[in-house]
Amino acid sequence: MTKNTTNKKRITLIIISIFLLAFVSGCAEFEVAEEGSQQQKPTTIDGCLKAALYPDADAIVEANAQGQSPNDKILYLFDKGSVQQIMGNYKESTKYLHQAEDLIDTLYTKSVTAEVSSFLTNDLALPYEGEDFEQVMVNVVKALNYMYQGDFNGARVEVKKTNNRLLQISDKMEGKNEYKEDAFARYISAFCYEANGELNDAYIDYKKSLEAYEQYNANYGIPVSDVIKKDLLRLSESLHFSEQYDAYKEKFGFMPYTKQADMNGKGEVLLVIYDGQAPDKLDNEEATPYFKDKGSYVTSVEVTTEEDNRYTSYVSEDITQIAIKNLAQKMDLIQAKNLARGVVKEVVGEVAKQGLKEVLKNVPFGEFFGNAVVDAVKKDSEKADIRSWKTLPGRFQLVRFPVSGTQLVKIKMNMKDGSQREKIIKVKLKAGAKKAIPVYCFQ
Image (tube, rainbow, N blue to C red; front, side, top):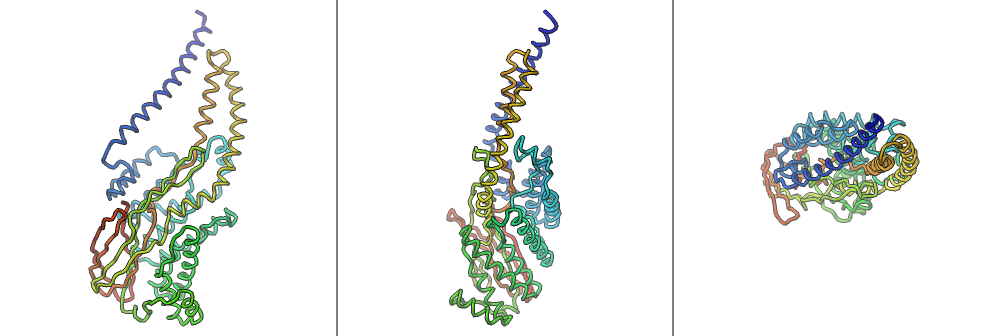
């Protein structure tokens, strides 16, 4: 047997071995996934959040980071920041989210080389910089961290960053985006101004929040709460903005509200309810992503104080609906990029096939294997970018209520399945003081 023949046989065996190894590996991976799906103990971040096993969720975030692609670093920072907040580690949460914010700023001006490489593969070849709403939520979640610690100045700084980020996004989208203002961020900013006694600035942000909620109602179907209307009536009267006060009375109709003078002897609590989980980002098999609503769990939250006064929650931010609508608005751009990428891949693929054909021309079945390799690479690269921030809530609800001195407050959550959950918290506030308190309900 000649040396040439022996080499050809070796090459053939190597190629066949590689092909079989890839096939067997694929089968093994499928079997492991099926076996794992039978386990009852939460082994995912989502499962741990639903079971309120927050330290376990944090451990999974850390485990997932091992061997993670550098392109996915921001996902680790997102999830780490969220889980640390849920665990009550507000400073740690802010630290990780600050790193995420820095990374977003760094990635804003993308590398031309990276963009070109994504045309030969897909957007997974690029560092994930977050969807528009995710970038905004970085600062919103940080603002809440500061509020839970009683640092209302720090919270206001973060809200101001959300405004700047939204302007940046609008410029990038040439003003065609609907998500131009975050009503929830504006509202908590107004609350923070009030906490510092800056009523004029609070009034301005309440006004902007109302305008944003009216836009939310048009875009996402989120009702405009009477709470913010009463805030505007209260402050416009207190600040002697007579013209604006009369205009609001005419616009809102008869609406009883607590006057500012009657609030001076009381503290005030803003209860922030984390309701459900952020939507899943999936591939629709056309190499374009979409968000799937995972549903919320809390229909409403009722708060009862010791004086037997009752207050009800309202939806202040529907992250799921914003995510779905925001991504849909980008679909034309995504599809245009996919089309251009397809043309580039077709050209490059044909060149690669010809090259492999020449290299493997003396190898048995060389042309077949060469074509199979190129086609497999092309098929693998036709995948949608389904990376997303999974540890955000599906939506936020708010309950705002006054408290005199020290009180036991009953919180009753009405669940979508008809059940109720209750808890009692002790609140102690000085007159005129304000406090933000989180309540987590991921299932």
